[in-house]
Image (tube, rainbow, N blue to C red; front, top):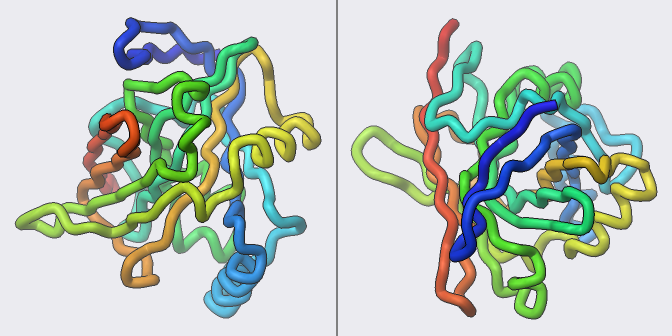
Length: 224
C-alpha cells in the first residue's frame, strides 16, 4: 500500500492510502464517437477492447506526484484526465495524466499503461463541492514545444461519462477497494487528433463556477 499526501483546497492536508489504481478507458458519453475512435485505433494496430467502457488496472505504486517521470523510449505521451480518489465514505477529485507508451499499445494496452508512471496533482476538491455543476468542469493539457506552452487537449468533462456511471461500472466489476482507490476516468480530445511526444506536460482541471483550478506540471526524462 502506498500513501500520498493531498491538500484539500481551502481545508487542509489528508493522507490518502492507495490500495488500488484503475484507468477507465473508452469512457466517452457519445457511444458512436467512441466506437469510431476504436476503429481508428484498430487501423493503427491497437487491439479492440473486450467491452466498452473498459477497465485497465495498474499497480498502486505507479501513481506519483513528482515533477519528473522517467520513461524508456521516445513514443510515450501524457493524457489529461479527471481522477477520483475514493476512501471509505469520502470521494475527492483532482487532475492527472494517464501517461502511456503508445508504441506498446499495439502489443497490449494493459501492459502499455503499466510501463509509465501516472502523474497526479497534489491538490484535490471534495467531489460534493462540484457535483451540482459537474458538466461545467473542463480539462486542459498543454505541452512544452521548446519555446512555450502549447494547448494539446482541451474540453469539458461533459464529453466523458458522468461520475455516477463510472463508479457504478467500476463497482460492478469489483474494482473499487474502499480502503483507497485511484480512478483515472477519461480524457478530452487531442487538438490535432494525433499523439504528440513532449518533454513536459501541464495539466489543469478548471471550475468556472467556483473560479478555481488545480494545476500539475511534470517533465519527461527518456532514459533509453
